[in-house]
Each structure stands twice: as C-alpha cells, then as structure tokens.
Length: 484
Image (cartoon, rainbow, N blue to C red; front, side, top):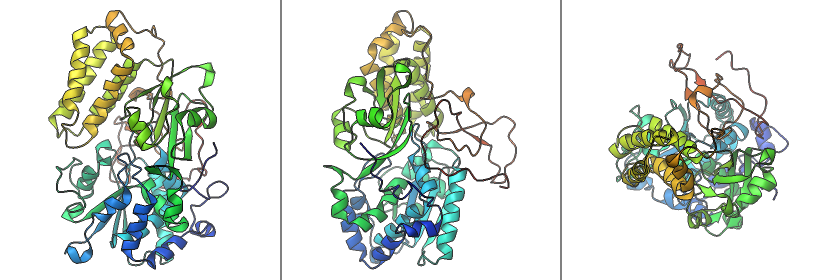
C-alpha cells in the first residue's frame, strides 16, 4: 500500500522549510480561506471531518474545541497550546512534522486560533528537540516578517526533558513556571487551563492536519480511512524491522501491510514475536494479531490502543521479562511522584521484575506484580501510572510461559535475548546533542561532566546510537549548530 501524504504532502521532492517553497504548494491559502469563514463554521467542519486527536487519547478534535467558551462568555483570554513535547518511547513523528513542514504546523495553529477566537498561541516543544526548535523558530520569523500572524501572538517554549509534561495539565504547570505535575480535573483546561483561562491543547500532528482539512473540505477528508477513524496517521515504525521510519498512511491499514509491505519485514530471517502498536504505554499484541487494522476501534477490539501511532516490532530474540523490566524502569524514572500508586507502584514493579529477570523470584512474586499493576490502574491523576501498568500486565497475560520459565529455572532465551533497536539501556546512550538520526525512544540526560550551556545552563542532551540501516526520513542535512 503506497503512502497517502496529507500532513507531509509536498515533502516528496522538495524542502518546505522555507516560506516561499511552502507557498508554491498552496501554503497559507487555507489560512486565507479560514479567515473568511465564521469561527463556528470552522468548528463544524472539524466535527464533520472526523478528525481525532493524534497524541494518544483520540478525542474528537472538533468536539474538544467546541468546549472552549466564546469571548463574550468569559472575561479571560483564550489560549491555544500545542503539545510538541513528544516523549513516548517509540514515537518520533512530531519531530519530523516540525522539521519537514513547520509552516504547515504554524498555519494550522493560526486557523485553529481563529476557530476558537484566540489571539494567544503557545507551542511547548520538547527540550531535546534543539534542531526542530531552530527550524520552527526560523519559520515563525518568516511568517512574522510576511505579516501573516494577523495580530496573533505565538510563543515557542522549550521544555526540560520531563516525560510527564506531555500530559496536558502538567504541561500547563510547566508553562506557568511551576513543577511539571498533573492537576486534578475538573476543572478541565477548556474552562480553567493556562493561567486559569480557557485553553485548547492539541498535538502537533492534529494541528498540522487542520490546513489540509480546510483545503480539501471536511467531507472529502472524512472519506479517507475507516469509520470512526477518518484521515491518515503518521506512523512511527521502529524495532526489529528492515525499513524503520515515519510513514503516513490511511487509518485502517493493517499491521501486516505496515511491517511487511512498507517496512520490509524483519531482517535476518527472524520471526515476528510481538507488536507494540501505539508506543510503549499500550498493551502488546502477539504475532497472530498482525492482521489487525491500525484504527481506534480495531485496536480496542484487539485489546490494545492506537496511542501515538508508534509501532514497535519485536522479533523472536526478545525476552518479554527483560522488555517489561526496561519499560518499567522508564516509567519509574519519569514518574513525577505526585500520586502514591504511581510513585511507589512503579518502584515495586521494577524491583519485582528485576527479581524475576535474575531468576530469584517465586510464584508469589508474579502474583504480587499483577496485584501491584491492578492497584495502579485508574488510581492516578494522569495516565502515566496506567502507562506503566498496562503494558507489563499485558506481557504477563500474552507471554506468561516466559515469566513462568524464569520462575522455574531461567530465561528461555538462555542469555541470548536482545532488545537491540527496541529500547536501549542508559549506558548505551551516545553523546550527540543535535543527533540527526531518529531514535526509538526519548533522549536521556548525561549528568557527568555537566557544563553550563548557553540555553539556561541545561546539561547536554544525548541520543541513542543508530545501528544498521538508518531510518527513512525526509530530513535535510543537519544545520551547523556550533555557534549556538
């Protein structure tokens, strides 16, 4: 199945990071058209299009925007906040959107701001995305110079590497200069968000889709994909697959088509063992579920979620206990500590999984691990606790024989298990603050030998090394960042 480029349209044969090039492919024509429309008509079109959030939750975008009060209903300013804090392991689509089509993202921001009658836009970008930040800042300068903002203020705000700030209320806390921790809801951000004012928070891919919906018409866009999952998604394909990278495909494409027809299958003649279909936080699927469609309803029926659209392929070299331990370690590290079930539960998960991995656990430990997962699920202010518990519980459910083998005498892989290209441990990180390679998990901080940086004294960000065939990407050669 060939790609169907909508968000990434025009990037096949040209560099769209410059305003002139973007205008050659119809850039900002949608903005002109949108500003001639009534805001309510734009909201109606978003509802008609069937667009759902691309950040993970999948909430209908038009309905979410309709919750924002009108200016005559509130004395407070209305804010549009774009969540560009992409940190879900396995997910790297937003960074390519920001790099390849920054003007389309900004055009989408301006159209969405018109729809909710806002004149204040904040784009919260992950701190490690230095290269993408510079591209987006240059694009914003071009738009400002061309007088396209129309009285709208756009602020680019860099985060500091906390995974928790991808959660919308923790993001708002960080924007306000507070510690990045989730808020209790209600009140919801639509009523009391940034600076206690009405705020609409959307993902990068969601916002970048808006100009294309205006251009092609909501009804035409709704014809793409399948029922209840309209349009395309930019899927981040990684793991044990020949051709990893970002691929924009209609929703409803099967995992088999993505992995084998587009991704080139599993290298080295290895067998497919499992698939993580929506980033590290979703339940795993087994090899016999490879014909499940990549859409919201099909994934729910299969017992998983589409999530962020990050498809991680796992071959038969992977020990699921080792994978579960690595995932649990990530979420333990990223827990903000506000909620006791998450703060303490993730620590217990790591301790028990480490014991199982070492072959020192009993049947009672496995039962305790499942009990800990159950005590975390649904008992935290934000989804991070669930993100830790759900995948590990699914590994036990789908691959209990491997966990039982560890209890009975040792890993069935006999020490030959490999998580290569799936999740790398901290000690395998490579020093590279502006790595051009797209990696399969967030960068970590190397705190050794930290020196003050020009940007607020942060430590140097590091990325994973690339092994094997580089990920397919539309990126231009990296800029010289030595002068920063």
